[in-house]
Structure formats: structure tokens, C-alpha cells
Amino acid sequence: MDEFDDDSFNDILGSMEIPTPAKQPKTSSAATSDSHSNVSASTSGSAVSAAPVSKPASNPHNVLVHTKQRGNPILKFILNVPLEYRDDIVPDYVVGRTSCILYLSLKYHNLNPDYICQRLKALGKSYELRVLLVQVDTPEPHNALKSLTRISLLADLTMMLAWNAEEAGKMIETYKQFEKRSPDLIMERVESNPHQKLVAALTNIKPVNKTDAVTLLQTFGNLENLINASEERLSQVMGLGPRKAKKLYKTLQEPFLSK
Figure (cartoon, rainbow, N blue to C red):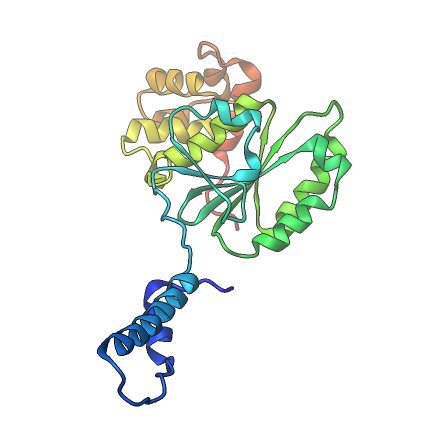
């Protein structure tokens, strides 16, 4: 029987025509009372038997775990967020309102290569972020991972690799913990300090590293003096050497606008 919510079920009951008992000659008040009691009991019995059995709403602070994942060793490493087992979810783990995780052992994938395609077909487009968490538990994973990478690209999945059960559990836990965090935490930070901007610009010149860039600015004082320095003078800077000096000098002397 299809499940209904309480309002829709009440609407259905309201639209039903409950038959009334046929008119009979008056006999006694007791008989009339018994007749109405039977009808009432019959009606209420039908309502009780037709009432839907709905599951309680899930706690938004919990990681929802499909009941088929019971016994998975990765669960004992999820320690900092509570777990809630459900049999009414399609993915293996739900870590947010629009985020889910499908767990796949590489060893199981080699034995059942069609399994992941069947899971994706059942999942459809239900979630915005769909993570394929692959536990690498085979000695030669390369061919299987190549196949799963292709599937992930075609199905718009984010594939994450875990090399043991603990890593897999911590990944699920981290996804839940960062569910409502700002993306600024993982975005590149743009330096506002002019000195730091110069250091970052110089390190874009291979093979100049950050230490070289700081030393150059300390030696020449500003960018103008650095640009006007000769190749020989650059090679005398501590830690730079002739190879780095040649590359740096060539880059600084190139025109900014190509003709």
C-alpha cells in the first residue's frame, strides 16, 4: 500500500462515502444503540488499519547510514559525529542535505564490476554532491581505478581514495563536520601585503623559490633595482647561483606586452 502523510490521508477519509444502515422500524433504544456502535466500530477499525506507518524524521546532526552498512569496519572510526541507521535512503551514507557517499571496496568491485553502475542508476540525480569513496584494498589497483575514474567523470561523481578503513571512516566524518563550513577555509588566500605579493610573483619564475625571492628583495631593496641588476650581479646573490640568475635575468628583461 502506498504511504500517505496525515493530511492527505484525512482528505481521503473525508471524501469517502460511508454507507449508513438501512432504516428499520423502531424496536428499542438498546437495539438502535448497538447498531450505531457496530457501524462506529467498523469505521474506526478501517481507519486504524489504513493508517500509514511513517518513519520519524532524521536528526540533521547525524550521519545517516544505510542499514546494509552495518558491520562495515569503517564505522568504528567515525567517532566525532553520531550515526543514525536508516533503511529508507538510497546511498550508503548521507552527510548533508544535498551530499551523499557511496562506499566501494576495490576488491568487491573486481568481483562485481556492474555493482557501481546499478547503484548509480538507483541514486539518479538526488544529490548535488555525490562522493564515490573507494577503499583501495588490492595490490594492483591501477586498472580498476582507471575504470572508476571514467565512471566518475561521466556520472559527475567526486572520487575519493582511502587506503584503509580508518582513512575511509575519517573522510565520512570530515564531510559531515564541514557540511556547513564556509568554502573560504579551502580557498586560496590572496596576499594584501605588497612585499608578499612581490615574493609570490618572483616564485612564479622557475626555479626561484620563496627563500630566493626574500633574499633578492632584501638585497636590492625594491623591484626597480632588481630589474635593473645585471645577470652577473644576480648570480652573486647568496643561494641564487648562475643557473637561477640566468633564468631570472632573462625573465625580467622580457617585454611585458608581446608585439
